Image 1 (cartoon, helix red, strand yellow):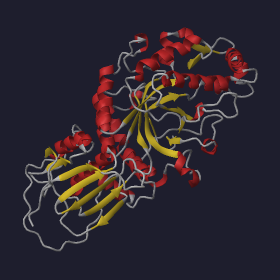
Image 2 (image 1 turned 180 degrees about the horizontal axis):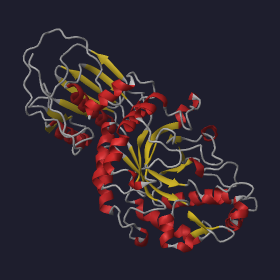
Image 3 (image 1 turned 30 degrees about the vertical axis):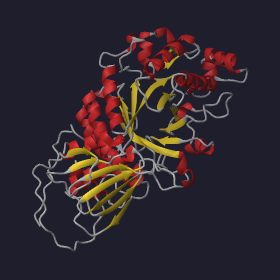
Image 4 (image 1 turned 30 degrees about the horizontal axis):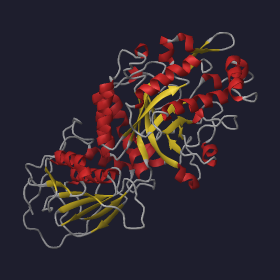
Length: 520
């Protein structure tokens, strides 16, 4: 049998997450082959497929005449089909009977009485053809990612049937572009890699003490010199949407607003002695709410996804150490809390109400939004409660007075895992941070490990919606864009594996790393 060649991708990441398109122009045609084949093995992909039903047969290889066919009735898959055809160097067609070397994409609703499993797909390889079906567009897209990786890594998609789905619905990367600016091109390269790894969220933290990084028409005075234009952001969001990735924007408040305060110093929080508090806005001042609401309304249409991150972490008025208290240190905030929420209210209530009000501002523009906030922006037993539907993004248990994740889970809250012990890539390694390794994530971390190294009880697994690997720019000059990309390469792949399939991986770490090197 004549060996068929699938060309490797170039090193630059311009056409997809693992490189450029497959060059099928030089692929030879298959000569007659023996009628008996060994039983097939699962395709080698990251993340691994959950289920493979082996069979005997030649498997699937693209040829010079290969087509990517979108089945009639599944026209919504046109973008997925055209992208995959471009990556394979194949023709694209709407409708038609698959021939040897062709791939057909189609939507297939579940049998009567069965629920849709979002992002799931079936990939069937038989008679030198491949069929990818799914209940939604995202599932079919992920099927093309599996086929793309199998061809890249081994030159052939093994005979048989793959049935695959993710364990967790939220799988992604969190990127701090406020403290360290990244170019549109770099961000788009990360999106392509994320898509091939079946990740579906990009958290975009674009406002902090050091800078505000997206063009603003309502408050141009707060925008840093090095920033993304709205057109840049539109292109990023457009690409993300095509790759089934949701961009989750974050304007972190009421802390981490130093860039706003620089332009509006009258909004800065001060203690009882008149000392300014870094990054903290005075939430008793109505002007503070007005400027943040202006920004939220302005950006509501720029980010059309279903999520918005409200921030809420590290508000310095609430990290006062004994014997002092927040109320004695910031009497103005304490008085405002009592005025607004009653005589028993305190500054925690005022901070909770602040986030509730910001959510209401956005809700007035889009009633379908789901809100997120960092775990230290939720407080127990107050006069004011955080919206029950708000997702807890758990990042640390190291902060003074931090609540354990079990507290939130026992309240019935849903959580997303950004555990700073494993998933925080903090530039310059300040404080006690060390650059995380893919090996440690792969071998030790699971979505149940929300705080430190100890997992919560498995009975809470359904409330943990997934996780994101986070890049923070605390010391922005510590690494270049290229160094960041290299540094997060294996941690991101390990995270993708552990979110797609929470079971212990079948491959040992060195085997996984070797596969990642082969896939690019």
